[in-house]
Length: 187
View 1 (cartoon, one colour):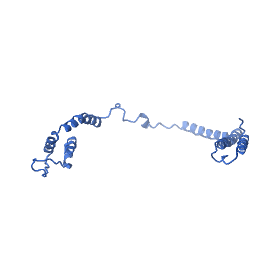
View 2: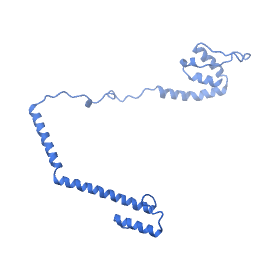
View 3: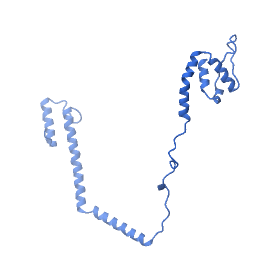
View 4: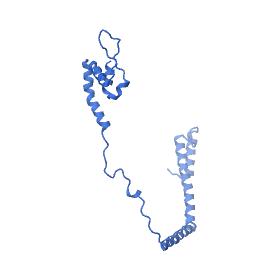
């Protein structure tokens, strides 16, 4: 009975309609259930039975500061950053339509054609083609060096595709030496 009273006291008055409170009317008739009609009556009847025990009073006195803190946190308004904080900036506003000047448009089109021709000539130059070819070869060489390095490491540790786990110690040493010689690694 005490726990239903505690939950009834902590709820707002509008939520009492869904709670059934059981309060003894008289000690002689313990089976009769009293359900008040108004919120005020329910609060008084549940509070009367609630305040009868001293342990319940201690629980309420300890929970009041907690309830006040929670209420402040839940019902406080957020901080305002300033009067322009919710507005988008000037960059989102389209600028005015500028007048079109014919000779500037012609110059712009001529420049665009020149830039496209220069780009095409640059891409087809023999120097750029030679550098792109070198880059592809270097990429393949670097990939192979990385694979060799990890193969040597896997053989030494006994893991991976290059593992020398089932070999005798002499064969293992020869295998690792051959891998290092192929990769060009010197110890």
